[in-house]
Image (tube, rainbow, N blue to C red; front, side, top):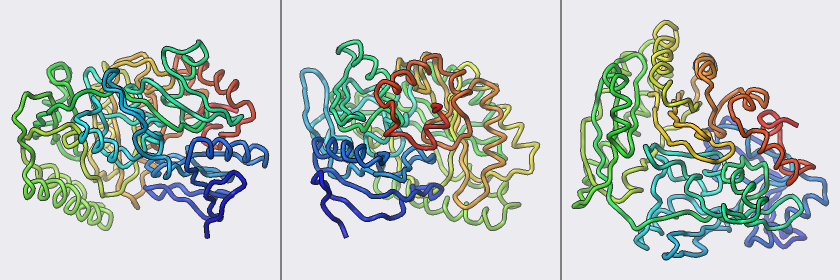
Length: 447
């Protein structure tokens, strides 16, 4: 039964929390759902007085324990919706608990859109940006790179607003808090740069691993958004190229969309993975069939309907960001490792890109970046595969996605992030008592 805490927020009794993938659980002392920024600030102050740590959690799409706590778990489910649209400035300010799918649809109704986005939109805006969620882009970066203003409640319960145009301290917070991993405070609102809605033409086509790696730089240069999936145990890849279009709009048909995106990409793929889990020796044969199941197609639609796809098959994931110039070599090493090992991998490997950005702990901070994501169907042993892949990624100076499986610690991360010390110094100023700390942050940021 819910109760009302001293701060006036809705408070739930102690219960276990579990993430989307099911690999992370925690049991907070209590959960609260503030209905306003003032209520959230009061809850933070109360937790500090009670000696309880504080973490905020969205939809649990992180594979790490970044949001776990035995203290106060803040659910921002009542902090949703658009606070303001400034058409002259080309910005939208949205409350932290707003799911990306609601934001995208609301923006579309207003004739607006984000410039780039990831391929799922179930996360809250704060959860997605705090861990560095990204799509793929030659010139346009992650969701966090599209933030132009940010509001968060800090450890003393004060509300801090920051942007690139503020004081020196506000600029430092802005540079770091756009991907803050929950270490600097509780994000309450984000201001994104938006633009008038536009059309994208998507071209999906099969291509061999040898061709796509040989022509990788060319594909990135020629397309605004290029990505591909390689199916282990095969030479087969599926590519996708998204580019702006003058139209006309030509969306995927309802029947063909259901067949490709629901029946094949979710239903049949789920069945194939379940079969592979039951009979691992069959996985290479299944992979050969699966990699040829999707045919080439071209369609034109508004951005969120092109960038995003339904993802109903649950999995575990590790993703590393490497210097883009090292992508082909790294991917070939990954393939050679899989080929000579007894591993059986039923999920494709995903490859995307991002331009360099100026966010302190962004995986694309200061360098042109390529991402390699490895997955394993939920319920299958993933440790051997991820360990072998991580060994390859780290040999190339890889930076792990903050919300996906990895084993790196502060010592390693300080060696691959030139501005790591800036972030930890800011954390020391904003949260010296580690009110927002947990075991994950202790590992990746140090004490």
